[in-house]
Length: 460
Image (tube, rainbow, N blue to C red; front, side, top):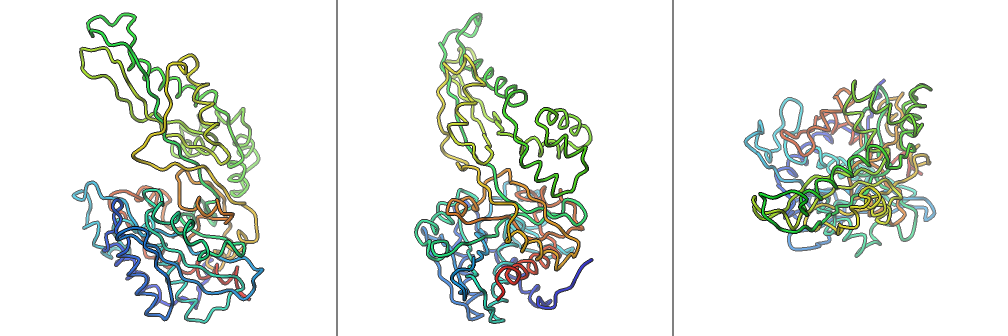
């Protein structure tokens, strides 16, 4: 049952849509970022409503913004809207788009353009919800902080990390307990079941380097070929990940409980001995779900690049294998190296393991509690829109800026409210993809749920 809220008007929603369009048109592609364009857009938007905000320039043409509605009770926890990033990924093939990817065109009940889903609609709805609360002279118990940032797509050094390191006082966590909502929960996974992101996997990029002995390619017998070593390593790692890597069913148990799965399904997902069989069976009926369950039940190692040799007729004297490794919370670099060497066996004596530099994000996995008064407040915020709704915890496969706040003791969650009438795959396939777009109902619902959350958690 949908319960219409009176506080958020059609004018509020239309103004939010216009802000999303302008943010898309600002074209803050990272790299290089140039996020100060959108930060200034938001600063102007807030100042027009009488809201004082602060801008922190972390580099030339790069900046971050905070604004605060002060709380009345120094002992009450506060809430951060964000970190929400205004930078977007590049468009590699604009000719494949139906519209100009930086037009922000509104058609067919969607706002089209790069970054609309990741995550400009959340930026705009959090900004508007904050402005709406300010205009109503909202008196929260704890601080309400708006936190808009740069550089999430390239690691956060000039964005969230910069503000956390240089201006932590603006985020409140030094003086009171704080909670935060960022990307990207709020998807409908089943009728009246909505995902919230309680944590994320870590990311390690490793390079395995092998040496061989050069020789003529016409005599390969018993050759010391570095490319063969790299190829063997890829096969050993793949086999180890499928057969021997330790399994963790904690996150599947949380999923099963949140979904209220039947005993049989829950038992298969939570039993480490039966889980591999369950994934093989699921692969036949739902390959996407099988991949997801596989990923949240272990550290994954994906050998994605191999290169070596200097000439086709020369036996390779060097080769390297690049690995994308995703760890569960609690699994550190020591854990990663232990299992790499265990998987490689005797071959581990011939490999040099280094960090891959030049792309990607290094991060440790992190998580926040799936049960708390704040999580209850998030659920109530959604129930004001869908009275039978309940939340289902998941961890993200990819890194977000939330990790920087969790390191400071700020429980951080992916939370919004996507249109439940749209299939989940529509959202997942469009993020960073061709014809990225967000439907207008998702914008409206997310604006309402952020507004609701502030009241549910901070009201006097």
